Length: 308
Figure 1 (tube, rainbow, N blue to C red):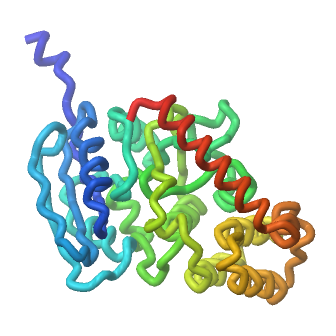
Figure 2: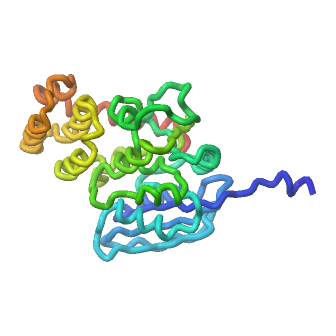
Figure 3: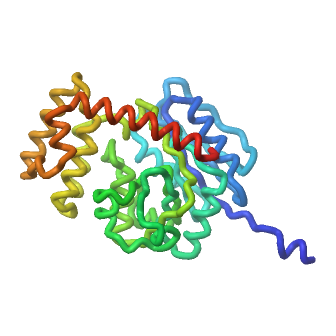
């Protein structure tokens, strides 16, 4: 009798993974889903037009049910995730990019806080540098300040949320080909509580050149800016341009880089107010080399220090 009382009830949750190619990393991501503890998972995969179609993943580990949807032509990750949300059966959904990974207690931790606060749960990863006294509780910080003033980052693979809440905000914006995670988090967190766990449970893959966040898509970035700029302070906009231009520092991207400085001017911003933008303008090659070295060192440090 007592053994039944002490038995842990495993929560049911839907995990949504859009994928396009890169099967090896996708299977690595699925492996991290199987390893989740104290949960039962409905895994929903959306193949966004892979040249070699992704095969349905068998059940196993924490995965008790799988669904596979295919887009006849490549749409984008936001469109694909919305298909997953629409077809999910659980009351809570979590998102994972096909090249990222989770620690084994990521979902367990997220569900605990969602049930307590009905918030957007954000799993910790290396870019969150908020004060220790803010972790594991509702963050009383405007999300634009959080994102654009160096306090942290919003990444899709860190998000866990009630299905009813994300549907209230109409899910991901499929008109955006870039910054879809920023857009969703800013819209939700401007009106709803959000929380970041102290424990690092998410490993973001920084080495995949195919992922949109690692490439510069100027047009897509401008669509995001035009949608959100009325809520952004001048320093927020400058930080936004820093994020774009740092991906345009190689010599082959010189013309795009010049175009971005013109965009800064058109938005009536003074780039010299940003130390980074000034350096990017004066010594782009040196800055590009420094960023690559830092990125390589940080990735090795994170992978060696975390159990993923």
